[in-house]
Image (cartoon, rainbow, N blue to C red; front, side):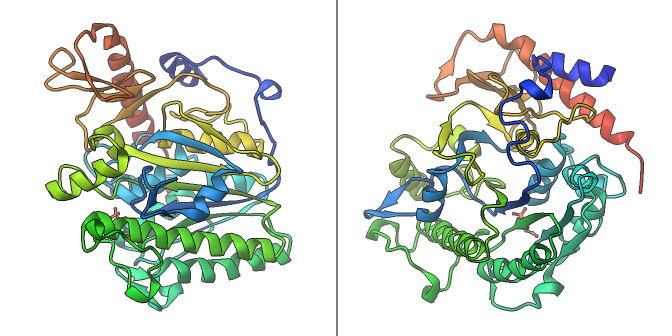
Length: 412
Ligand code: GP9
């Protein structure tokens, strides 16, 4: 309880009793379907190229969703697996190794475990081999009842690293339907793979006509792959509707981490992305991933939230909708429907001590004094940043508390 209080204070959050929380329990008892999309950044959302929408299905879903347009990735060296970890724990991934390697032997307080108490079955689907990112340990550590990996998908319909997203969704759908017909409530985490770098989609699956300047470029291929996964998501939602499962679901869609790392892509690609954005492609754009919360009948008409938020805020926000309080749970994120300000530590791909608050992205160098503060909207350098020292200290403290807490969690 003391620790919980300390975290709330460091984050500047006030306790709100459940009955006073916005949307508390608004989706209680519904099935939870969470789609984590490989390499999906925020900028393809709502974007048109050559007059064609890149993500038409997600754009239509967003019209009926709470859409968080300024959510930032907080993944560590475990990339995709850290995104899975963040969604399910709201804890900081470890900074020097993938969390799944360091703490695969632990028992994490987690979303699957919370939902189990409410009678849910939990399962996670990913078409790669289970040893990748040590998921063979990560999934039991997170408390999933069942995982479905490459062996379940049988190496069928391979694109890139594994079975296609269409195939993943079709096979997963059969499992979800089997739960539905027996009235077993479920939480399904669907972790896509097809849109992994280098974003090569077979020509007979391509439905995006690119203007010439994007053809045969990494950026163009990235847009094609985003269009591909968008179509697969649209088909999954159609199937949920056909089976009468849609209305009783909460559907969450988010990106795991960037796909076009601006320091690693060519100048030509940097310029192409800048053209699409209408401004120079910078760090803030790169770390910005979408978070879409769709609860049929509840999040309609949709709303866009442009407040600063991070991947560790996803779990508390979803939990609130499902009527889970998290009052007794150590978490480092916050419910985005019941908070106005934020402070987010990012310590991989940016130096340790980097953070977002509602005004700036701060990147330290040797320490705070020689660091740089960037305006959150324009990414222009802010010369006078001394007043943010307190936020810097608070972020480091929060990260240290999370590390210590995780170190002391019981082993399986
Ligand atoms: C690996 C796949 C991709 O199984 O999830 O991981 P990434 O390379 O994006 O971290």
